[in-house]
Image 1 (spheres, rainbow, N blue to C red):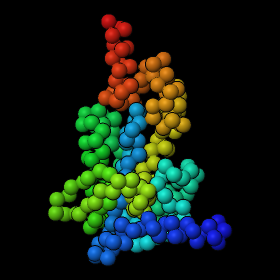
Image 2 (image 1 turned 90 degrees about the horizontal axis):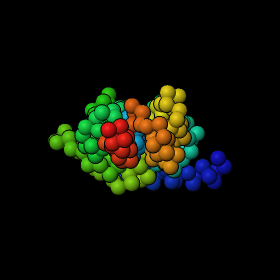
Image 3 (image 1 turned 120 degrees about the horizontal axis):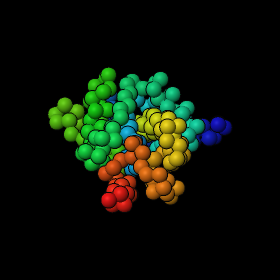
Image 4 (image 1 turned 90 degrees about the vertical axis):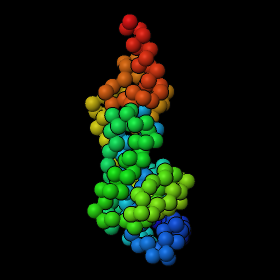
Length: 222
């Protein structure tokens, strides 16, 4: 980056610490950001990450994982896991998603991610979801938090990179669906593939259109 671009990026990243700086001023020094990847996907596990960053750590180009390229995400992922005070990333299985519904499964996953940190945070910031740890840990839910909080943005990147690597492996096993580029989301070609060859074992049976396609296949077989 040029000196001007570097200066602008530093200023932008500094603004991502607005929520964290308010909490630092209140005495909270171990702030975890939590986010997920794959919540809206039709297939596979959801990944949930929790990250505690050092105070005001500058990570060039840090942003919501959806707003940066795969290449930049990979670079940031390595920087985050190297420099974070603590991080964790867990999977929420297809079975758990189908059993508890995606909202409850996300809550359960976020709690597990926080509890999996090897350093206990004293405050947790989440992207939209409201967590409750009782009196043990205070929390704050931020709408679009992955674009507004450095800690949540870092968690979004760790979750996204981890899941993208998983979907690349799923594609090798089930190449008909294009998981390497659609990441399991309901693109037109993905849905057409489900209709053509049926769902694979990784598809979430409680999600439409998978649920309705399965129901249609069962009717056809009767």
